[in-house]
Amino acid sequence: MSASDYVTPQEGFWAGEFGSEYIGRNDSQQLLASNLNFFTKALKQAGRVGSAIEFGANIGMNLRALQLLYPDVALHGVEINPDAAAQLRSHIGQDNVYEGSIFNYPVEQQVDLSLIKGVLIHINPDMLPVVYEKLYTASRRFVLVCEYYNPSPVAISYRGHADRLFKRDFAGEMMDKYPDLKLVDYGFAYRRDPAFPQDDITWFLMEKGA
Image (cartoon, rainbow, N blue to C red; front, side):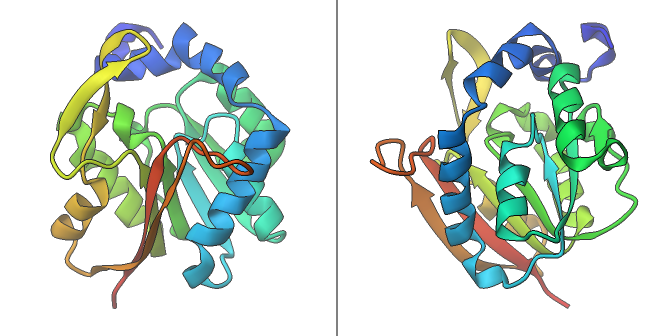
């Protein structure tokens, strides 16, 4: 796809060269260990998770951690960058990867857990309701949102690029949009953690009601 095929400039940014360069910065055993520690805490109240989908899965570092945590879990991923999607397929299977924009992903089945981590902050704010709808609809029970938090919306520079990173209360907006979503647990992971650093991520585990 060319940049003109995308709805927002942010999509082309991540589908292209910058998104491919991101791969090399996020493929390490240290990150895998940190992610395993992260999800052990974030999903403590979820019990057993039999299936999951990640929106913006990149090369699957989060899903690989989930696989260690739940060895029998059925994994699915949505990824816009072709290079990342190719690596993702090698980890979770050809048929379990949707290569393309989150906005275009057709939700055709539900899983126990829908997950997004460090992706909503890069979504054009006008399109957030579309992504919220995908996250909500894809889950039959739990939604896990892991992002930079700010009580009110704010845009900040990202590696010298404007309008590529936005902070706000994503989980709060989802709970406002879907009243049956209830907060189960939440927490914070610090970039200076001596053993298991993350990128200053605040996470929110929500459960769908009947």
